[in-house]
Length: 437
Image: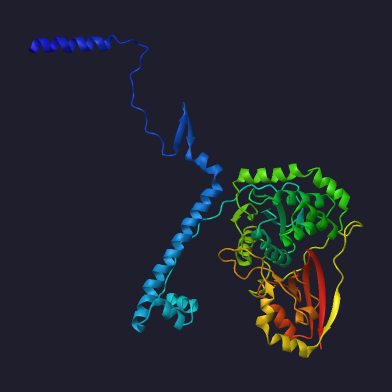
């Protein structure tokens, strides 16, 4: 048996030794790299390659994860810090917060407990974003460029108007705005409205027409676009030829294609020198990003805003001063009876009910940052005496943008002998000077 086993072993050695020389010994495959997600033959496809093409959606996921964690962290902190205080008083946390002054009391309790929050928000990606040859609002050589993707039927885009007006007014030489078109398929009039704005731009009136569209979002049908063109003083037949010939279709499509390449799917989406901001922003959030960019560039920051409810700002840019573009409506001076004003202001609630903010859900963190529109003008009311009309949008009071419920307007009329109010009437600026005596 031993001799037979040796014979078999020898035969096996002989067979191995006689193997064909062109058949290399097989080696176990190398373990795949964790970054490799697929192969085409020997060519790998990496996760980094995929991630580069979906940077914005991945950031949105990271941001959503951060928001969930931040909300949960807040609940945990309140439970562990405020919970014992509420238990000592024999009440619920909600009742304790109500009795002690709301969120301010919570913040004070967290500070006294030496709470340190280390959870940080994900840093927004910075992309190479083209401004194409689109119109620019602001200083042409401003160091900070905001590229905003807009759909003219989106109420969220309309709500960015006072924020942008405030920012450009406070940083006139440091920020410029470029608007690019992203009409969403859910909005049937958005694509033609975008082309109409470009046709207005061909006559040098892009910005006034842009402003009209965002203020008149309930009137974007084809016939309304001609009426808007007439209001801003365009050559209407030339405008109609441009629009009906779809001469600007390729321009709008190019903007939308760039948006798709970047991964932009919602409006408004903004890029501050390429830094990504998704959805409508409060002034404070947008200003913080701009200030950070100015600091990065080593530039001096502008002074802070005046208050949280009213801000220094200029009027919306009037139409260009050419022979075909109408100037802003002339200023009107109206004398108001001081006693009548005082009587009207005693019923502020009724006045406030005759104002409204544009419809639609503004989204979290956006409360109180919409323009104020006159919903109704009652006979012999203060608004009628002021010469206001239904649909007028109150933009500024004594040179500051109104982003509240009308309080700034009422306060000014009740405390000053002369008040200047600028409104947008069917998309065009109109200024009223009121003398209260």
